[in-house]
Length: 212
Image (cartoon, rainbow, N blue to C red; front, side):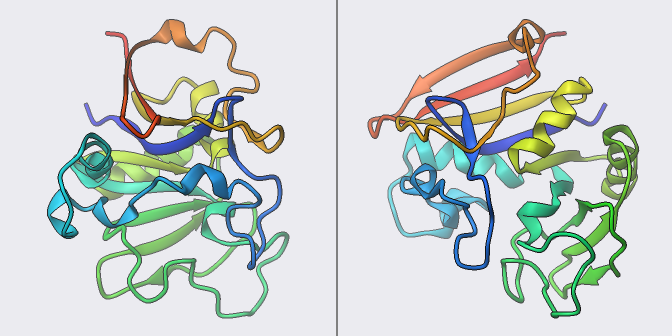
């Protein structure tokens, strides 16, 4: 059975995984401190950058392994709200988004599909987590589906009991405000077995696997 997976979700010690307001000038919305340690170059494999293979780099590189489609929330795709403006926006990633798979963007507002030569296609869908996951699994064709975030999107799938695996990176900072991953998820830990390991830089990697 294909799994629904979360990878490399950075979270503060007080439970926040994003800032409150995303803009063109502040794509992290005030939560930039969560990403100071992160080496995004290695999400496709530890061989993609000329640096030692460390614990952080090895775990980050699991992001793309065995994944056939992604689901993301609208705020991860862009800063726009309401009806989509005719501004030519094609995502934060330029002409070569790193996904190389179908990506389902959850939104209540219709938008034409956007296709890229490298295999990435952004498909804009309005539906429940169950409905969107069904579409993503069909598009993936057998491999797993990755939940790309942000935290409010991941939280919806957790509340619907649709998440099989999470790799959380707990960054040793407090934000005091932002978007919490944990709101409305009481006793969530009872559904998972959890392993933790702390890297020398102080980041704690948590691996949450759904209990069989």
